[in-house]
Length: 221
Image (tube, rainbow, N blue to C red; front, side, top):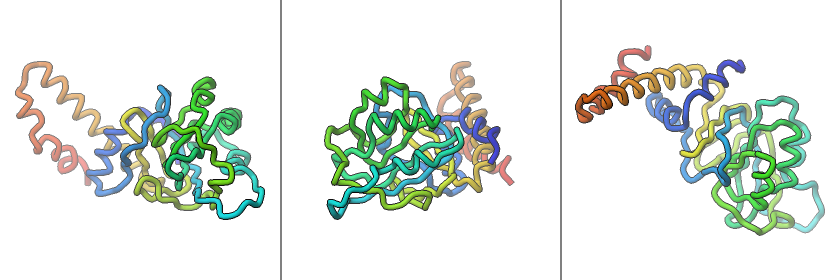
């Protein structure tokens, strides 16, 4: 995958990417994963992490820290699955470590604590909520770099992630070019629809199903 494809993906919003996936019959859009502070949108490649309940009191390395230590490129987004309700799986110390590694942000199927710490250094965090309850002795890292199920979507290492104020969407790495090309056409058509409505054209006509279907039927082989 080229950086130019990630740049093109970054020019789209999560709504448009979700629409492109719909047209192609692909899953990838999630519900309930929102910015946990007023953070910037993030786009990048997934580094997957699976969490689960800690089953014994044996001391271990803190969850997620081995993944952060191993990252070598500046295009990564941490995709953290398996969070427990009301229990943190992110905090300010690992946010500082991630920032030092130039990780673009974290998306969590779970909760974060110390959110002011992430906010104070400008580190984007998307998730289900904020808590004060520590993960220590409650949550463990089960695996990394393997497929995870995140908010009902199967995400593989290196899949693409886009997260903004509307939510979080995943795009299979093998299909990123097709999704981006269709997303660009959708964005162009929708911008045209906005301009048509502003110019006085009937909104019922502009938003008729045939106008949206034309994006796919006429242009996608």
